[in-house]
Length: 113
Ligand SMILES: [Zn+2]
Picture 1 (tube, helix red, strand yellow):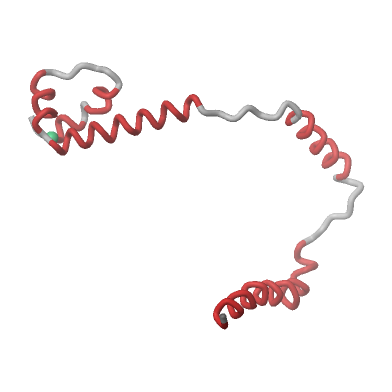
Picture 2: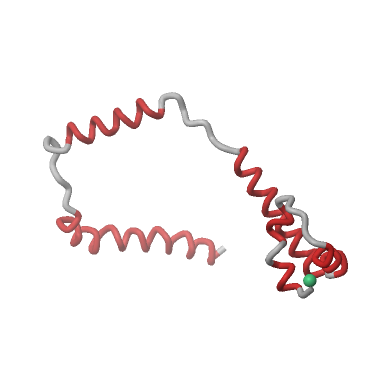
């Protein structure tokens, strides 16, 4: 039996399906397949931990979500629409240079120390 033959059986082996004697003998004598089996076992353990770890949502999550959706629905027609293209020139002339300075100044201060 070759490693490639055993590799197809390893996932089922980890989940408890018994393998035939030839495959079992190969696994016991082959370091590569033993390592692969160990990787499957670690992966299965990690997946089982994921299954038992979950976050409870806050009890007020539904009420908060509905409130936000209500405000957005209510304000859809009443609030002015902000169009990003109106602010493109302001962004290019002011905001982007400010962002570059924000990154550049701490880098220069750090270099001069
Ligand atoms: Zn092998």
